[in-house]
Amino acid sequence: MLSLAFQNRKSAAAVLSTAASLAASAMLIRSIANDLLPDEVHDYFSSTLHNLSRYFSSQLTIVIDEFQGLSMNKLFEAADVYLGTRMTPSVRKIRVVKGDEEKKLAVTMDRNEEIVDVFENVRVKWTMVCRQGQALGRGNSRNRGETPRLEVRSYELSFNKNYRDVVLDSYLPYILERSRAIKEENKVVKLHTVNYSNWDLGSILLDHPMTFQTLAMDSELKKELVEDLDNFINGKDYYRRIGKAWKRGYLLYGPPGTGKSRLIAAMANHLNYDIYDLDLTNVNSNSDLRALLLAMSSKSILVIEDIDCMIKLQNRESEERWQPHKNQVTLSGLLNFIDGIWSCCGDQGRIIVFSTNHRDRLDPALLRPGRMDMHIHMSYCTISAFKQLALNYLGVWQHPLFDQVEGLMGEVKVTPAEVAGELIKSKDPDVSLQGLLGFLHSKNEAKPQKEMEAEDRSD
Image (cartoon, rainbow, N blue to C red; front, side, top):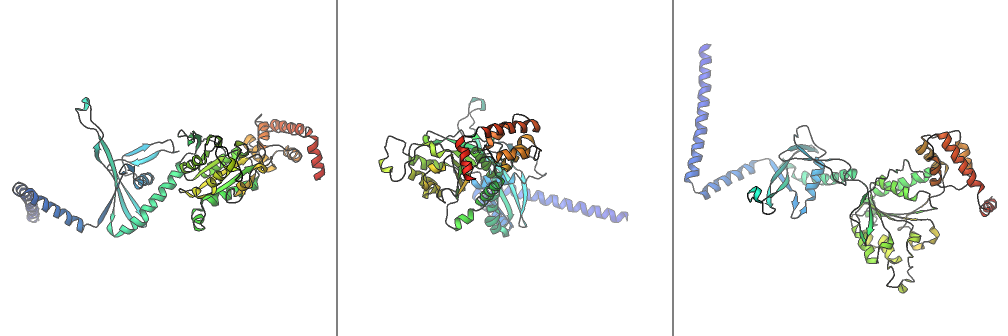
């Protein structure tokens, strides 16, 4: 037994000695070859060996650079967003940033980190690669005249080359689409206004808390509107199939204080769309109006409030007499803006909202379907709107005084803004509702005689 063990050790030692000798010989031969062979021959053999290795390899690597010329590579940007949601415990180093247009922190891979992903049973590996790019300018004395260089990043996507078509035709398009959805989820809503015939670059974050859950509006009308909005945002392919621009128009009309502005805020929060508030008095001509449309982002809401009193839009018959020194935004220009060929530019998904206190003052050409597809009457406060206000302000959905409030609301016209103004005076439901009842009684007693006579005739 001892003799056998000794022989095994001797054999193992001989194997190790042989391997070491071969390694030393290989290093010696490489050293001699480097010294004796011409550079051209050495480069030829190195290139040949490298090509042979690549030929027999089963892996394919796609390089996705950060920039394409001077422009950002959209695929790199999409991969950055997508991979930020695929971080695993194996990733040891990440980058975290927060932009003005995102609700959440953005997480990305750092240099030399790897992430493994699986798509349709295909295993892929992502690697973040960083290298030094072109010079940015001359250095200063502190860095001894060295030229600062830009860090150039790229992603390397490696996978079995048998799945090349799956990756190119399905996986990468999936990443582009998924990244768009992630950015939409994280995007904050902004309010844009016109400044000297251009959208103001200093857009304002719209931190309006109004949602359809808290909006005081007739419940059936609210349900109908939400369904219409949802059908619209999910209808891109449908609009393309029927040959119609992917846009929709809403006319909000009714007396002041009925919640038209709050409804617009709720729409923006529901869709996560930016609002472009267009004051036509700040627009000098139809061509400026067209330029504003082209500068709007897709999936946004264009709002023209109080359109009946903002400017005196000329009708199409009188436009020939339009004086050049006056504001030259015409009705035809506005109609082309919302319904002409220019409205089809871009990815669209736009919503156009007009608001007015007097629908009867608007030109019928503005109101037809295709321009204003849905007319929404913002009426005086209804019972369902009152209950929503009571829930918002007092936290109650039922109360013994509700019957009296509802009875008076059937006799007097009161806006949601007026009801809210009374409910906010006290957090105590009893005190607040008693105050509202007193307000409704006084308003009912002060009704004009003509209004009472009109009610009697309708009865």
